[in-house]
Length: 330
Image (cartoon, rainbow, N blue to C red):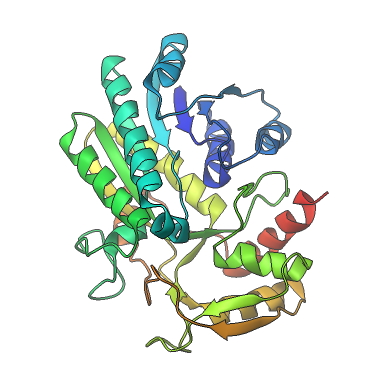
């Protein structure tokens, strides 16, 4: 079955393409390389032994994206990753995020309806919860005021999906880390990393002098922010499970995708150091705009309906993250 994967050469997208191929799907990649690299395409080919169709088009431009739908018959569904993803950048450049993240979905949905493609998996985020009233967050937890324009775009996109006449699953990711164990695919973002684990890897590699821990005066176990870190391969597999679910249950649904375990920044640093036998130079800095104090998921719904659970350990994720950092420089 053919599945369009927008942003399929990005970090999560490339890992999902591998999992789709493993499960017998035929992914069609749509990616204009605005924030990734063609090396992920080479990595996908090497891992799977398959030649993958790739269209270098912009999802925000209707005429460009339409060429994919015109050329590819019998598309059964779409997995939509294509979006800008930096919380920090979205605060500096909100218009860029609203135009791209919302605009690309609107164009995509228009073409899906035009070409009778009725299933979409949407790449959402736990940022839709804002600062939650209670933990862990469930799918029933309300949207709170988003702490960043990035989070607000995800809220708006989920609302759009609720209004359109297409079956959809919105997957609310927590914090993906790690890479494929081969080290052949990973986060090829051209931007300077803004997420914790990639920054730790840069410090370990000597590409950055030190890690700045953004605040240690939060009401958490050690004063630093707490997140739910999930191995990117587990996250990728959830998309395949969601697609199977949607084919059997044409409806609209939402799932949290996390481990259900919160780790502080300092705990994450310690796990990385322990697994890779390295020492990370860090210092405490001021809080960062857009950061939520603490968030982690409840996973009962996804376990029950999708039969999905996170399987890889935090230590495996730290090992794979460092392996990617080493190999991507070669």
